[in-house]
Image (cartoon, rainbow, N blue to C red; front, side):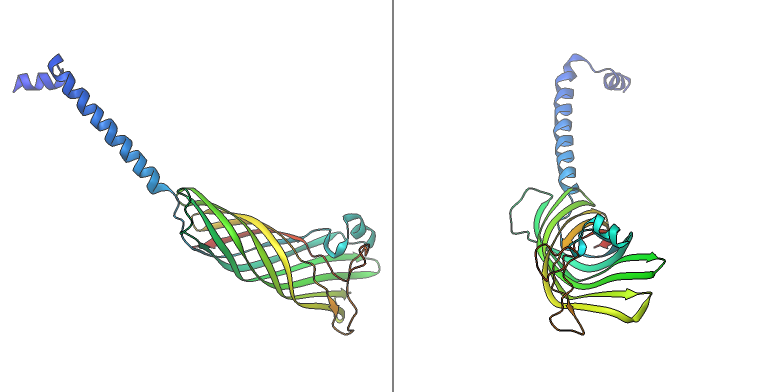
Length: 245
């Protein structure tokens, strides 16, 4: 028994080939285990239902203007908010490397409220726009590890209702209203998904013909109507926080 203990503690030359074979097998098993673990750790590419909300920032190019145009008119403040609910449908039948997928990103409903404001010695003017949209388009998802995924997408943006009001001195009764039913635009953006948390950035643009609700044929148009058009550009940037599952 003592001799066996000594042999185990201090291997002799006759045991070295056996030990080398055992170490080789252990190395192979360890390599296979690491590869299997890495494959298992790839992010799951499944359909993702999400809802999110955030800050919607109208660009200075809204209503066909520039920043200097808005400054000349006295408008210095702008802002807004948005929210939406949708699903990313993964097209698993399209062969791609592990952790990658092509999908269809569909927003069932999105809403946006954006506002420009000026306040001076003559009073206040609010230029507020409300939109209710649906969006759909292709997406690409890359998930390098479990619970981490990146999405990029481009969507057709269908605005079911776009309404703009010009409100003087906070008196809604005297507001000028303009509206449009069914206008089409484009949205592009990306998401970062960390477990169930979803962070996103999106740029969307839409140019509806906003008609005065009290006067047919009277369109809001643009600040600088150099293109001689009745359309009103409404580009915006959206910074969102939400959840997906």
